[in-house]
Image 1 (cartoon, rainbow, N blue to C red):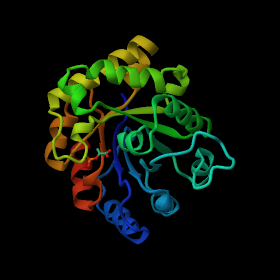
Image 2 (cartoon, rainbow, N blue to C red):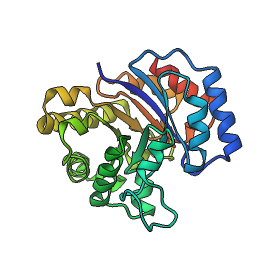
Image 3 (cartoon, rainbow, N blue to C red):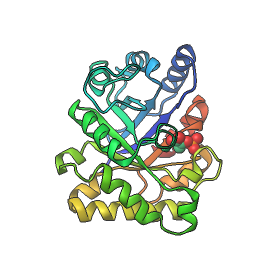
Length: 253
Ligand code: PEP
């Protein structure tokens, strides 16, 4: 059985004090998580050490960074290397978020290097993919997402693929309040699982968690998470308030 995951992506929100309070509130009310369920706090860099310290004794709860550099070290002022994250106790890193693709011009080739750097540092990768509204309207989303996967993660070995979670995040649903319907999410997740099977075989395909992201909230999480190929969610806005995030976590357990 593959892992079900609810991962929050705080983006560029909350002070360290606010973030600390949020993690504490979530941990205080966290439902029991079986070994196959995982909760992740995706915080800004500045919060990571605090969040690691707060979560280290809670089983099946982890911390993710929202980015890492593609080089292991060097003269890259203002950047953070994957090895630094790993040494600080961070378990995962989100790579390929549409906001970084858009505002930081991260293309599929660069993202492939970031994925390599993260895996080389023994981080788990949450790799984001997803189409814009134009592509959805043209009904070419399957080919578009397949190309994103092809160019950024399909160079990995099967062993490396086991360290990757995929997050399907249609751009038109991120922060817009417009969620993909359960049927749209399921269709894309089944497509992604299909291309995984074609590339890596049925076993890797069935083991890879595929999360949905895009205006997911407690009120729609149950329906989305009940889709056979949806293994949880990557949550933006609704991860910033404890009650909202807990509502989504409860939809998973
Ligand atoms: C995200 O940014 O990963 C996301 C899914 O955002 P939101 O839940 O706010 O749409």
